Structures are given as C-alpha cells and as structure tokens.
Image (cartoon, rainbow, N blue to C red):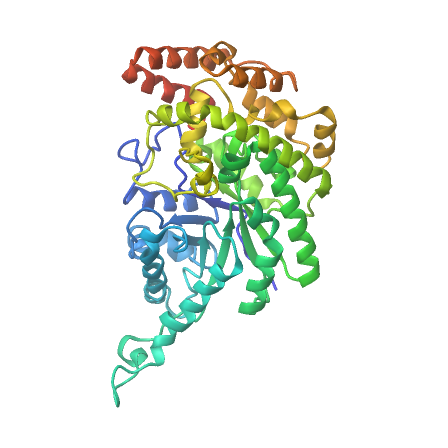
Length: 492
C-alpha cells in the first residue's frame, strides 16, 4: 500500500523578520492565514499546512473559505488526498481555559466532510482526518480524543432524542469520517524517551495497521534543556522509534518541529539538505514563517522541492548511555546560566515585535520549572531577545562540553560544527559586559570550542540595541531589533 505522508509541513510559527507580501500589516491573522495556506500549497508546493487552533477562536469555515476563494486550485488538488490541512488543538489537561476548543474542533470535522462532499462529489475523502495534540505526556491523552470522536461525535448519529423519534443521522445526515487519527506532540525529556510506549499503546488501542506519526518538538525542549542536549534527546528518541518500527512491522513516521534559528533546529532554504542528512529517519519537517518569508521565493521553492523528493532512511546510531551523560551535564549547566539571565530576558522580551494575532500554546517551561522560581517567554521571543543582545543561546551550557563529548555525539550528528558556526557568528563579545560575570566566563569558554567568524553588521546592530536599551530609547531599539532579525533572516 502506498502511503502519502508529507515531507514538508507549513506552520504558523511567528519567527519571521520580514512581512509576507500577502499580509496587510506585520501581524498576520484572520483571513491572511487562509491566503497563507493557499500560498504554501500552490506556490511553495508544501504538502501539508498546520492549522493552529490554540489561542484563537475556532474558524469552522476554514475549508469552506479555501474552496470558495481558490476553487479551481482545490478542484485539481484534492484536500485530504493530494494535500493536507491538519489542526493543532489545545490540550485540555494543560490548557484548561481552552479545553472546549478541542470539542468544537472535533464537532467541526464532519461538517468539513460535508462541505468537501458537496465540492468534490462522489470521490470525496475526509479533508481533515488527523489532529496534533501538544504537550502529550501519555497515551491516554491521545486515545481519549480518538474515543471521544467515535463515541460522542460520530456515535450520536444512531441515537434518537425521544422514544419513537427518527435517528439523528436521518435528521442531520451521516457523521463522517467514522474515526480520526490523533498524533502526539512530545515536548519533554520524559515523554520523548517514553515515545515507544505512547505510540505502542495508541496503535494497539486504535487498531492502526497502515502507519503512525509522532511529532517531536525542537523549540520547547531547547528552552528547557538547551539546544545541544535537545539534539541528543532527539537522536535517542528517533533511534528508539526506529527500533519500535521494526518490532511492530509498522511505519512510524516522525515529524520534527524545526525553526530557522539554530537554537530551534537551523532549518533554512540554504541548508535544508544538511539538516535532512542530520535527521535521516524523520518523515516530515516543519517549515516555519522565517523559512517561507525571509528568503527569496525561488530559493524557498527549490529547497522545498528537494525536501519533497528525498526519501527517509534509518537514523544514525547514538550511544544512549554516553548521550544521556552529556545531556544531563550540559542541561544542568544551561539551566544554571538561564537562572542568572531570566530576569533580563523577560524584561527584554517585551520589546520583541509580534508576528501573529494570538499566542502559540503556553509551553511547558513554566510547569517544569515552576517550583524552582523560573519563568521565561516562549521560545521565539526567548531566542529573539538573546540574539538581539548579541548572545546566541546555543552557546549556553557548551562551556562544560569536552572534545571527547563532541566526538561521541558527532558520530550521530555530524552537523554540530556548522550549527555552532551559524549561531556563534552573531555573538557580540563587547556586549558580554552587560551580563553577570559567570555568564561572561561561560560564554567565552564555549566560544573557544570551534573557530568562527563574527558577523560585523549584526555586531554593530546589537551594540546599538544594548545602548538604546540602557538609554531607554525604545523606539530606536525596536527598529534595530527588526533590522538585526532581517540580517539573520529569522526573528527568533
């Protein structure tokens, strides 16, 4: 059986420095995101579009709007068969205030099917048949959603409202599809290392017999543990998922949530092939806003074409015991440094420009560190703040890494040197005086790991940003934050 699962997925992450041509202003929202989905499908040739439900009202008319506005395109490219729209829903176990949005989304799936049925006729397939659940920590969370859909969305079709009355499906029509896929988004060390168990439980519970996807986060784990430890964590998880794939004789197709900033994955149109080589067993790579809008369209399209045509393969071996030793050592040092920087990052992040009309999901840093008194902004604002101050967050924690550590990890991840240079070029040594002495020493030591050249244009901008910050020239500071982001080709 041929499996049609995307190699690239356009997302709505607000990490772009430049304004998209189709947006009315620098903050994307509303029907701009309808245009964005069409642009990603038609011009960039992305196969899947993530639709964020978190932090905004459910747009029950997304499918209808796409079909009405771009009829000829969708007549030729069938949604649910040739291209895919996949909602990311709130997790009721964590995001209590948005819990009902999940139920609204589930109820909207049969309505989207009805719209597609009218649009495509007899050859209809479900336009939406899969959901992503963020902050998944156990299999019950995803099984619960799949069962709720079957029992309470589709299940009510055979019920009658009073004795002798017709069934609801006779009154309102069939409720299709009969079942949906629920894909976990894993964002913590514990959930990632437990990925095989989470996947196995769901596959067994739902009788999955064709393939199963699992989304591994890159941004929030980096925020929690540091960038280098997160790479190790991902490598171990991907290795375990490959072993599970063999055990179950079922394709397990990982999604990797990468951004353009090295701290969040370093996937750009310039180095797409390199990053794919670094994660050969990943099926789907996220293309966030900076990837799509901060480079020339032709370059973006060419990179996506290359990515779509590549086949996945086996992961590169990692020594799990050695990997976890390095993970624990570096993440502990990263956390020590973050404690010293948190107040400055939080203050500075209020000057980072918004790029979307709502927040993304709340993230797990506040939960995992709550008892230890640390709060941080979301990953994009976090990165944008530190980069704007001339301190690439990738360097934090690397002061405890030895050459032997690097040699052991490089067997599995050969991209470390290039990732390091891509980040370290934006270091401003002159700005280190604005940070605690222990941070200065740690960053100076980390910077000696590998030779690199400093980007002088960016250095000049970050010097001005910190001068403006000290003098409270906030208008000038905001302008230079955007200029620095445009120089890097990502905001954060």
